[in-house]
Amino acid sequence: MANVAPEPVDPAERPLSAGHLIVAQLEREGVRRVYGVPGESFLDVLDGLHDSPISTVVTRHEGGAGFMALAEGRLTGLPGVAMVTRGPGAANAFIAVHTAYQDATPMLLFVGLIPVADRGREAFQEFDLTGWFGSTAKKVVTLDDPTAAARVVAESVHVARSGRPGPVVIGIPEDVLTLPAGSSGGVRPLAVPRPRAAEAELKELVRRFERARRPLVVVGGEEWTAESGQELMRWATRHSIPVLADFRAYDAVPHDLGHDIEDGPGRGVERGLEQDLEGTGAYVGSLGYGRGDHAARLLDEADLTVFLGAPRGDVLSDGYTRGLDSETVLVLPGDAQGHSGRIDQFVSAHAPSFVLDLVTMSASPDTDVEWFGAARKAHVRFTTPTPAPAPTASNDSEGSGDSGDDTYVDLTAVMAVLREELTPDAVITYGAGNHALWPARYLPHRAPASLVAPRNGAMGMGIPAAVAASLAFPGREVVSVAGDGCFLMNGQELATAVGHGAVFVALVVDNGCYATIREHQEGAYPGRPSGTRLTNPDFAAWARSYGAYGETVTSDRDFREAFRRARASGLPAVLHLIQDPAVRAPATTTV
Image (tube, rainbow, N blue to C red; front, side, top):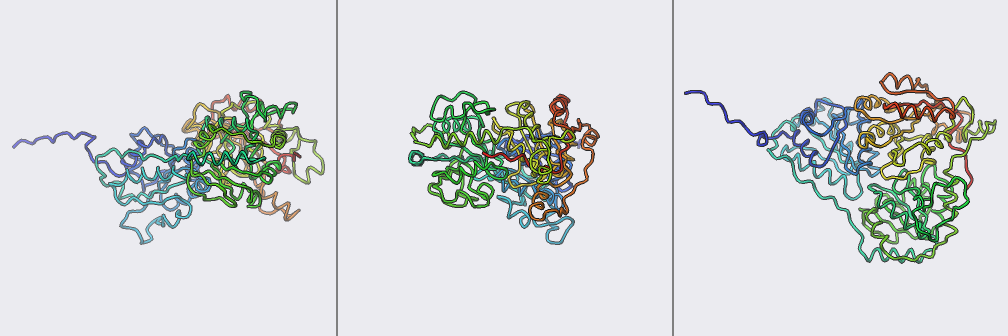
């Protein structure tokens, strides 16, 4: 009998492996990139990505991969995806999961695991996934059934985006990944709830505004849009209601509105004030580390505080010491997690959507216009860069302000240049440290999704975030401000930027020490610095060795042209800024 060739099988009818089904479901969820360090524990997923439209961004460290995924989640609202291997890889990615959890940012972390049969035998790189991540992730799940791969991914995306956003960790055993999971290309993505306020809740809040003389709005959280931010600021400006931002949520609303606000009670309060923020508006600054004293006073003096997307937490309230007893309205999409102090009205709603409903309600609050105007003036003064004073013995010993010495770069002057040079929708990234005080104070935000910085104070985030921002928004300008300590925690991701075509300018502030800790030492143990000195490379030469642009700047008067050269290079760029080691923060401004 002659051999008969088998009937060809339609690729669509071939059973997918669990690893390939994970990729197919990520495609259905709209994921465009995954960030990771490859591992033998998830080879089948990597194989599925080979033919996928999803871009695989190969990073140089799992911490960098995690921070890139977190940045993507912050900027796009869709969970960023990181993939790492078991044990050591998962340990390196832990910092990003903790940051995503405390920052309330959607993220997925896939962790390759040992084969199922090897569990509980202290196999190579074995660890307890739930034991490690259970206290700092919204959900931890292990894929033991290959046919459930698509469902697990869909549910994880849903959990990460719903309510208070956060990270979900998915364990993927290497043997399960290769098992057949059926021929389906995935399941329908799950709808994400965006709860809206009831009309009665809106009317109650309007009545509270109308009774208040000094109402205050605090914004924060994720998914603010140009429409929601602009509408809130128009409404607040019309009614002379000051708006503050939560710590490192400064891009929730535009900091100025040009001149498109109709005349109202708050209009014109700043006329005659030098170097205004190019227009009117109700934004009066931020809370948390580096905030102005005027912002703290507003929190103390308000007779109604409305939190939109931001609970009253530790950093916002100066360690649970401010604003705890004022009449309080809290608007969050889930519960009151992270909030401390009084709550008079709680509205379970998606804050940006809530704003669009609120502004349609008629209200006639009789607010304290002078209080509002004073807050705005104080904010403008606090955020306007002023020339550094000439160096004195007193300045040097106190370590406050900028040196004004031509051998060093005055960061306040640098911020003044950036305010003039940056495009309106530029994305700013930074990690943690005293270097972040300058951009947080002086750089205004005019577009949503224009800031990525860790609210939990994690160092090393700025450069990975800049890589992700450039890849997510290739048409937008990206600038990262990094301290020398923060930069070298994940500076190796400059290689990822070069390899994947990410373009940004990184300003590396070199003062030769961990300045935040040194500042604390100077206060508690004067004259006894210990464990805070850094030995730094030539960062410009280091950048050039990666194929990036690198230049050293030793005087702020040379910064503008150096920045223009870096931006014109078309490469990821590092400007090595030499800062006076005695400088710890911007000069004090009395407001």
